[in-house]
Amino acid sequence: MTKMTFGNAQVVLLDKTVEGTVSIEDGLITEINATEQVPVDAVDFDGDVLMPGLVDLHSDHLEKHIMPRAGVYWHALSAAVSYDAQVISSGITTMLDSFGLVGEEFDSDRNAALSRMISGMKEAVDAGLLRADHYMHLRCEIIEPDIVERFSALQDNPLLKLVSLMDHTPGQRTFPDPAKWKAHQKRRTGASDDALDAIFAARQEARDRFAAPNRRAIAEICNRKGIAVASHDDTIPEEVLEAEELGNRISEFPTTRIAAAEARARNMKVVMGGPNIVRGGSHIGNFSAGECAKLGLLDILASDYIPASMLHAAFLLTDEEIGWSLPRAVATVTSTPAECVGLHDRGEIAVGKRADILRVRMHNGLPVVQSVWSAGRAVY
Image: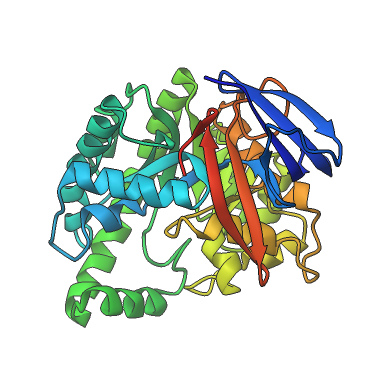
């Protein structure tokens, strides 16, 4: 690695923004200076923002590349490489690819795509074809009778950094109103009322039989191995308390204000979706991420299903309506998610940290990624 210096930049530090220079060497940040002078050999940022590369804890966008249409499976390696290109161009230098271990009723395509996604990403990583750092986030549907066995087959993957425990049984959490669940599934699948009624009853029965023991079993495995665990779609305080008792330190996408407040009171990090901020609300009518931020309950933003949403959402937190400082907003997509999953070497513009660096230019209120360096290497 050669030495590099970036100058004439608005440098976003953990607690403030300064005009200055940042120097890197051998993939690490070596020096930060608050100065208006630009060294002759520096990369001139021309007043653009210099900030850490984004750390995304939750993205299922790889599914769109491996399965561009229902039942159509793309070449696994090609999908991995094209997905990575979209990730890095969105400013995400560390991605936790979210692989779903889900049920069959509506998700047979996703299950069929799972092995393709994992093998495609592994081949791309092993061949050095990716520009972002990729890790694994396993999303486990705990009402599935074989979920512990399916999880166990992947639990020793060295890239596994996060596990979320999901329960999408209709009538609670994501869809407390069964009528809304039915309308959503009709739009998504075109299933008949009779078919949906049968699935509703089967899922209720499966939850009663399997959810509690499966949740406990997977949480205990993760706690022994030091893998971060997140609850998912918490709606009532009792669900947050259950998650806390099992050692979960992250509440992912709480669906109500009261659940987010309880998670914060229990020292759990609250994760909301970037698309929720950009769109101005949840696409299925749950708790608004903007409202979560206004109440001071938001800790982390994830891209969820749109990689470009992370950077955009973080900057929207600084608008007058919410009013966060830029360092506080940037922390939701950099340092805080990195710390949550034990990646202590990144997520901050600080001496000794990885040189994951973005050059961001503002255009009509939209942050636009101009350049990306990953561990000091120019990748975009």
